[in-house]
Image 1 (spheres, rainbow, N blue to C red):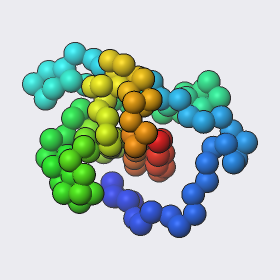
Image 2 (image 1 turned 90 degrees about the vertical axis):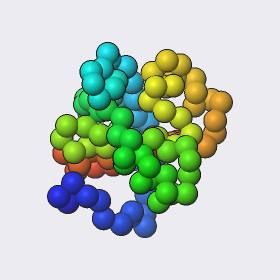
Image 3 (image 1 turned 120 degrees about the vertical axis):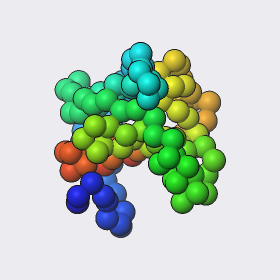
Image 4 (image 1 turned 90 degrees about the horizontal axis):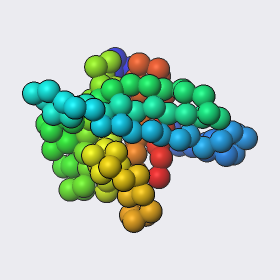
Length: 124
């Protein structure tokens, strides 16, 4: 609400448990301007685009979240609509170059905080 999230829910559902295919995320690095690279993220479920948005690296938020989560390997990216993407143990840079980064780090996580669409997706 108002570009902030409440507490995490006590009960989680998986796409598989709901009889749906797991989301597929496509990450594309686009040449950036003065604020760095722009990343386009597209989320597909059952081969249908469910989200398509652009984010840039947010260094200030990254520092805040690293302290809050007590994890030096957190990166934060902000979209123009107030949406956020958080990554743990990987970065959008590394994923856009080689998406097999997920295989090399079993603790990798991607959080899509899509406030503009009122949902959050966690991929691990």
